[in-house]
Length: 269
Figure 1 (cartoon, one colour):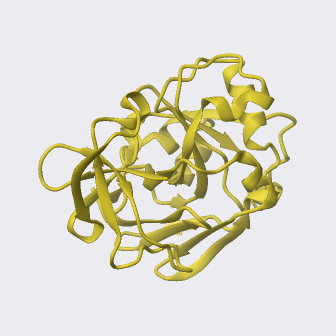
Figure 2 (figure 1 turned 60 degrees about the vertical axis):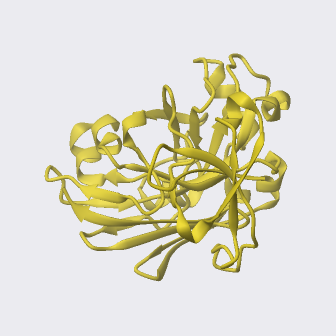
């Protein structure tokens, strides 16, 4: 089931997206969105007698984390190598503020403080319940679903600051979307789903989730051993090799097989 947040011009709504995805992760023209009664993470999936063509609504970030985005660095060996880093012995965590989250079609603002802003296409995990100390074998019990992320990074500030909070925390530096897919199992990603990033239509990243060093259950267990996760919190699972810079007016698309495509354009602030 694909759960989306959307608006028709008034307050945000939730809905179930219907329709087929083509090979590029785009919905069919006849795709619709069935409106739900409230946030399904809290109210359950309760369809109303109201639906819209997806083409007639504006999709929003499918979730606005109420507390945090927990991101994982260097979780693909090839990406660690391209950045001249070693593979960490355990998951390398950092936080992105919830104010960095934007939705599909929203602009990524190029900050005036940076001369090098990179894309990093990633699989994202959305947490569905309050949880702490979750064993890896019970990770599916606390996962609401999966979406696509772009862990936008001011690479020069990451290097000069010596830590990552500012470089990865600017407003608009965490695009999420276009919806949350709830009917997947972490094992689907062990078998491998493609993670591809395009810049102005050119393929830049072409990875697979089968190459994740630490799988999703391991990440959930590791994170919740340190901190409580709340409904709507998001885990970014790391990016494959091929990251690179974006410029103002560039369009970046992140596609994950079976999840769709997240598209954003870079603009000056």
